[in-house]
Length: 508
Image (cartoon, rainbow, N blue to C red):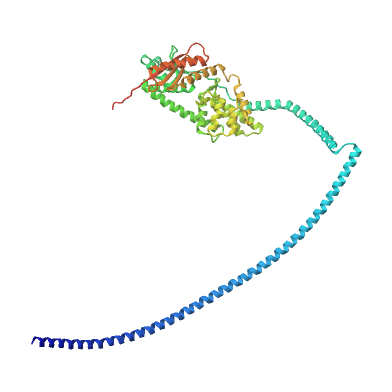
């Protein structure tokens, strides 16, 4: 029974499978036919599209070919035109070459003819020379030498006569003209000659003020002397205190400081130092302002500010007792007048005259002569070479390289030669005091030096942090020994070395 059921099941299964296969086969055939039809349609469409695209590409290619042919044709036409132009130019060049060859041939023919003529001339010249030599009995070289010698003698004689005539005329007129120019210059530029001394008298109202200036045990006087470097002489002269110093700047600072202290009424060492510092600044400003006014008055422009300051500093200096600024202004005006008379550059001459003694107010390299130092300063601050040379050569310490230099020399001598303009004694005195201070300042550690009591005392202030007490003693001895060896002076000089330590603090 089981087997029969199994067989029935297998048969049923086979029958179902056959039916399914038949259905599937029928359906697949339909799909396949439809797919073939669709493929055929797509194939035809693609063929049509390909043909259309081919036709379009063919048309485009034909257009490109046609355009390329047109461009090629145009290029061929241009090439033909250029060929024609080139052929035309070649023809022109060939024609020019032919003309040039013809001209060259003509020139060669002319040159040959000229050479033949030159040869003929040389032959005739030699024949003429031989004939002249036979007639004169001299060769050509001998005749030429005699002629040259004769011309030289004649020219030398004429030149000597002219020179002698010119020199005689110059001798007759040179002194007269020179004196005329100098006199006219002096007449046009006439100024007073100021003579300065080494003391300033400070007037006070009464002896009470004098006592306040002196201070308790002379503290105020000592503080003022230490701050200004001026010797203050308080004697029995009523209502007057004498300020003694060779440096007019120091005396002016001391005078102004005393004036302010007396007006203020507060006179003590701390106040003195404060007022002296303030007055020193004021005097420095006045120096600059004086320099500016001087350059403006003389019409001088474009000068370095440091040179302007040094010009202002001349106001407080003297040369052989003569005020240095007035001397420089007078020399500048004389130089300008002489330059105008001689037809030279007036501005340069005035500038050189103003700057000629600038080395006297400089603190640099005091061992150098003031003329050389002035030239060095002018070169340093951008003055022109001819002006620098005039400054350096006004004492004939270097060679004069410009026409302005002798004018400055002459005008400097004229200004100094005025009656009463100079005092040799004062200048020697000032130079001796300057030398004293410079010797002391040359040692390391020295901050300030003051020559007092007409050069009989030298006070040297040193830094407390730079020298010890023992070193100050050695310094005093060394300075004294050097002064003995290098200087000439009357009597004896006392050297005082001061080493001071200050401790300052403020209670708040």
